[in-house]
Amino acid sequence: APVPALVDQAARDHAVDPGRNVVLEASAGTGKTRVLVERYVNLLRAGVEPRRVLAITFTRKAAAEMRARIVAELTRLADLGAIPDDVWKALRGRLSEIAISTIDAFCLSLLGEFPLEADVDPGFGVADETETPRLMNGALDRTLRIGRAQSAHDADVALLFARMGEGRLRGALVRL
Image (tube, rainbow, N blue to C red; front, side):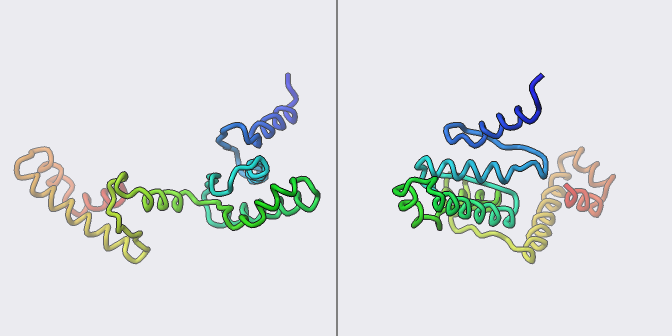
């Protein structure tokens, strides 16, 4: 049977190879960030432009940490001479282009770039925490109004309103 450490190292080597497309999925504390940093650095060392690399994580804190580690690793490798001078010279002026995105920020940027394709108003905005309850209550009011109108000619909807009542229906929709 293969030695677990060798299997793990082979998987890590595969994951940091800039010639391969990978999805990295692992438990907390297994070194995902270290592998992703190494992969990102290897892509840049291979000549990929920073703006052509898509790196997404869950939190802004993790994104900022990963970006800082990438810049620190590039600087360390350049100081050691492990990055050719011409590559480092071209890359050094573009460190500000190194971007790690959160899932929500990436989706927002896609919608902003392609609103018509996403069937979104080009002038859309993102609701903040104070707007969300107002918008949700308005949507619930409209939904229940439509349901009441539907119940006039749909026996199943009428039964649902009669059995549950609007208060319980509203609560169920909120939880949904």
